[in-house]
Amino acid sequence: MSRDNFSVRVLDELAKRVAFRCSAPSCKTVTIGPSDSRVGRVTNVGVGAHITAAAKGGPRYNENLSREQRAAYDNGVWLCGNHAKLIDDNEDRFPEKLLKAWKRNAERNARLQVAQAAVSTTRTLIINHEVTIFEGDSNRQVLEFFEDIGAVEAWGQEVYDSALMLTYELAINAFSHGRAEAVHLKTHRGCLYMNYRGSAFGPSDLEHAGGQGGAAALASFKEQCNGSMELTYRHRDGINELTLVDLNRNLNHKHPCALRLTKNTVTDDAFNSVLGCTEIHIYVDSGRIFAFSDARQLIRRLIVNLPDHCYVFHNVSKNPGLRRYIAEQLPKVRFVPS
Image (cartoon, rainbow, N blue to C red):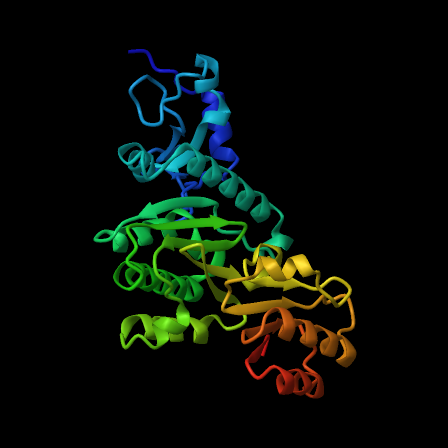
C-alpha cells in the first residue's frame, strides 16, 4: 500500500519550527546533536510524524484528505522517536485535535525562546483537551491527561503536583461518594473542568466526609496554591461541576463562579449565572477605585440575590479598614490575594 510521505522540505520545516525539540509537552527532548563517530555530521533522533495516517488503515486516517494534503506540513508534527511510536500505538488517547494543539504549543514556545526577553515573563497555557475517565482506571487516566495537556510546563512542578493529587482524589470521590458512572475532564483557556452526574458532593463535603486522603489533598492544594489557583464547585441539574482556575492569567471571564463588576456593580443576569455555586468569586476591576460606598451597594445586592454564600473578593485594596468593613457585613468572606 502506498504511503503519502513527507518531503525533505516539509520534514525540515517541521523540525526547525520547533527548534528540533519533541512537540509532546511532557517531553520537549532535543532531537538533534553532533555525531560521535562522524566529524562534522549530526545525529537526528526526531521524527516528522503524520497527524492523520499516511496510508489507509493507519492511526487517525482521514479519507477526506487528498494525497497532497496528507503529505503537507499541516498534517505533520515533530516528535522524538518514542512519542512518534506512542501516538500511533494509542490513537484513542492521542486524537487529531490534541496533536494539532501540541504542534501549536511547541511552535509558540520556540518563538518565545527566540525572543529571549519574553521567556521569563510569559507562561504557556495548558493545552485544550478533554477525556472521559472510568472507575478502576482513573489513576492512569488522570496522570496521562495531565501529561498530555502540558500541566508541568504551564503551572510549574509544585502547582502541578498539588493539582494532580487533588484531581485524582476528586475523581475517586466522584465514584465513591457521588456514585458517578464516569467523570469528564476538560481544559479550556487555562481552566481545568471536572463534571459528572451524581449526588451533590463538593469540597466542603470532602473536608467533612471522614476520609483522610481527599481532605488532606484539598488542604495541601489550598496551602500550596493560595493566590495562584482556586477550586470552585457547584451542583445544578444533577451535575457536579468542579473547576481549577489559574488565577495568574486573568482568566476570570472563564471562571464558572465569578461575578465581574462593571463600573463597580453587577447586572441581574450575572447573579443567575452563578446559581448553584458554593462560593461566589467577585472580581474587582483593577482599573477603578472600589471604595466603601461601592462595597456597601454591592453587599446589599449580594445578600438579597445570593444569601448564605461564601464570598471571595479578588483584587480588593489591602486597606485594612475596607476589608474589615466588608467582613463585618459578610461573615463568610475571604480575599485573594490575602
